[in-house]
Structure formats: structure tokens, C-alpha cells
Image (cartoon, rainbow over all chains, first blue to last red; front, side):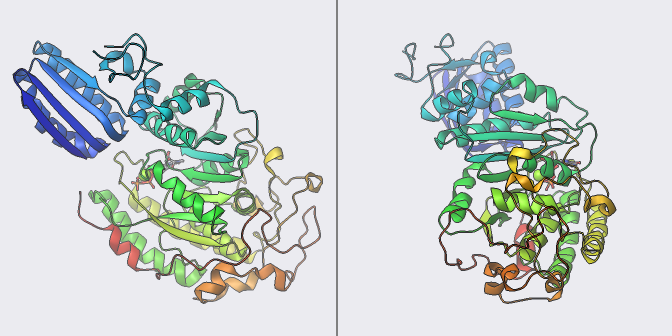
Length: 110
Length: 379
Ligand SMILES: Nc1nc2c(ncn2[C@@H]2O[C@H](COP(=O)(O)OP(=O)(O)OP(=O)(O)O)[C@@H](O)[C@H]2O)c(=O)[nH]1
Ligand SMILES: [Mg+2]
């Protein structure tokens, strides 16, 4: 798994690529945790994640709660197809704020 | 923000998935994926999602069969709640072991190619395409995933198991003539004919069924390839290492005894159309009973596939070419004619379309080296 971070002002963007599973959660948390308090908007790009397991899903739920508690928002941008499918069948898609990329649908992101 | 229109987003793979979950197949599946599942409530849905995304995107009819193994958690309910028209959940009343689960799943599978894959997505499903090409392009009957050196997280449990399994592997190679280095990888692909022949004969309910199947494959003269696959040691294994290794040893003896008694000689293959779909119907039960297990009337058109010379397996290491591509049944019939419903001994040649010449074996290494590659440092 690879993690890339961009911070600009009150917005932090994190891009995760590869397999996001229980082996990667600790590193993910180490990298992302400091951003929770620092950023108003935490944007997480999952477009290059090939697989996400239940442990990583649980971590995202935790992160969503933590950002809210800190007065910010977690926004998932650009889900890969496997991630979208997995979130859908685990009924987790509605839990998150998901921003669709422009042109993806009638109601795409601005 | 577009939370209001979730179904419009996504790309082709997502759309293919949506089509697969909304429309029952109108033709027989080309591919069946069988997942054995025992108490997999934590791991099964992401695995189903990954497999369904990838297989649907291939654009050919496919089905998913999950063979529950008497799970006491919510595995079955989670799957049934999905209400996918092309997913079948075979519920077992009690836990019997992975071998029995895979056997039931394979018996129910209707595809021309049958993959069985573990519920933990340890082998990413993207590797499937490569394995299938070995069957369709190179004429193999069986392609087994082989765990090459990637990211084995060596927690003590799995380390113990791997160390023990190296000794077992030598035994397997010398005693059974099975040259596949990684017999236990939970990612194996079969032609439908091969799958039926193998799993109709196969009797081991536990984890050693992998070895048994490969042993039978070599005895049936099936062409077997071992293909390196990426493998990520998934956390959450439900396996007790030491117990499994001891059981494996016991099973080796069991397989040998069953063989000596002629138990692998005469069970007819289960045609897909006749295959039992219920939990118990395909169970072979005790080894002693296995040869009398549920047979299938010869009228179905599938004939029994007698195993080639029963004494043939005793040798230690035949040359790789002979091992992989010979059709020993064609040379001489078994000394004891099969007593199955179809008395005519048949050569073990498979009947699916495939290029005539036997492919060169892909797998050339001996029994030992691969075990070393598995014991790499944690990622
Ligand atoms: N442990 C266990 N697994 C079973 C059984 N029946 C079916 N399975 C399935 O067999 C597959 C292998 O299970 P794992 O727990 O990953 O076992 P493993 O892959 O051999 O072990 P690891 O290498 O530690 O992952 C999974 O899909 C299980 O759900 C059973 O009785 N016990
Ligand atoms: Mg596993």
C-alpha cells in the first residue's frame, strides 16, 4: 500500500493506493491521525485501492467519527470499483460522505 | 456531493457488477467460483465484493457458490441477505472441514471452469485471468496457485505451521509423487471435467484434501500446472497450526490406506446437472464408506473415470514430462475393472476443447525450495 499526503491550508488530501487491509491500518493511522485535528476537511482518495478488508473499513469508520468529533469532515473522493462494491454490500456507503468525480454521474462533484 | 445518486457513479466494472447482481444468468455459467466458508462473517463480504467486481468485469457468465461449513456466526445470513441471483449459499448443518466444503461447492458448480478460492482473499482475484489462460490457451486441466515470496506475515502460529509443512512436503513428494511444491494454496482452478473426476473420488474432509486432489490428479493423468501467485497472509486465520500438521500426517496415512483398499478406483464422476445442491448429499462420509458414496446413474452421459494403474503412484520421482502429460489410462486398463455403473473402462483423457500437444510443465522445481520462499520477513 502507498499513501500520499497533500496539505494546503485547512484541507488535507490523502491518497491511498494498493491493497488496504489489516496489515496497513497501523501505518495508515500513524500518517493520517495528525491531520484529523489540523484540517477542517480531510479528503481521502481511494481510486487506486484494489481491495479493502473489514479491518480497514472499520478504520475508516473510526476516522470519520474522529474527524467529526474534531469539528471537521472526512470526504471520500473517487472510490475504485472494488471499494465501491465492497462498501455497498457491507452497507457502509451511506455512512460516509462520498464525493463523486466530475462527470461520473448526473450529480457529480462541482 | 452526490450521495443521492449512488447508482450512476462508477465505471464499467461497477456497472458490470450491478448487472450481475440484478439479472439471473440466462445461460450456463462459463466460470464457477467456489468459496469454502467457516465462520467468515468478518472476511466474507469484502472477498465476495472483490471477486464479484473482477469476475463480472470479464463480461462472461459466471456464478458464485459459497459452501458454508457449519458456520456458527452470521456468515450465512450475511450472504443470503445480499439476494444476489447468481450467488448460491450451500448451508451445512455442521462443521466438517474445508475439504468437505469445497467438495460440496464443486459438486454444485455448473461452470466449464471451476475456481476455488479461500474466503480471505489471500490470493487477489486479479490473478485468476492468468490461471484461466493456462487452461484455455495451454491445455492444462488443473492450475494451482503457488505462493511465491510475498509478504508472509510471520506470526508465530503460521511460522510453526510452515516449518512443519516443509517436512511434510518432502514426505508428500517422496511418498505420493506429488510434485506440486505448494499443495495447500487456497486458489486452484479446474476444468469442469477435471473437477468432477477429482472431487468424486476425493474423500478427505479436512485441510489435507488439497494434497489428495493433487495426488489424484497425477494418478488420473491430468495435466497440472503450478503457477506462482501473489499471496498476502491474511490475518484472522481460523486454523490451529500444530493441530493441522498432525492431522495432515494422519491424513497422509489415511489417503494411502484408502488407496491400497482400492477406494480411489471406482467412483463415478458427478455431472453438474445431477450434482446435489444440499448440504449433505455430496458428503462422502468416512473413508471406509467413501467408495460406496453417492454415485450417479450412468444414464447421465458422464462415464466413470477409472484411475490409471493403481500401482503407478509408488515411484518417487518420474520425469516431469511423463508426470504431467501422460494419459496412463490409455495404455492399459486397471487390473480390477471398475464396478461402477459404467463398466467400460475409458481413457482418462478429458473431453473439453483444448490444443492437442501436451504443454511443457511450468512447474519445474522440486519439493523443497518453495517452502523457503514463503518464510520471508513480514512486509
Ligand atoms: N479453519 C477452517 N476453515 C475452513 C473450514 N471449512 C472451510 N474453511 C475455509 O477454508 C479457507 C481457509 O481458511 P483460513 O482460515 O484462511 O486457513 P488458511 O488459509 O489455511 O490459513 P492461513 O494460511 O493462516 O490463512 C477459508 O475460506 C475458510 O473459511 C474449517 O472447518 N476450518
Ligand atoms: Mg488463509
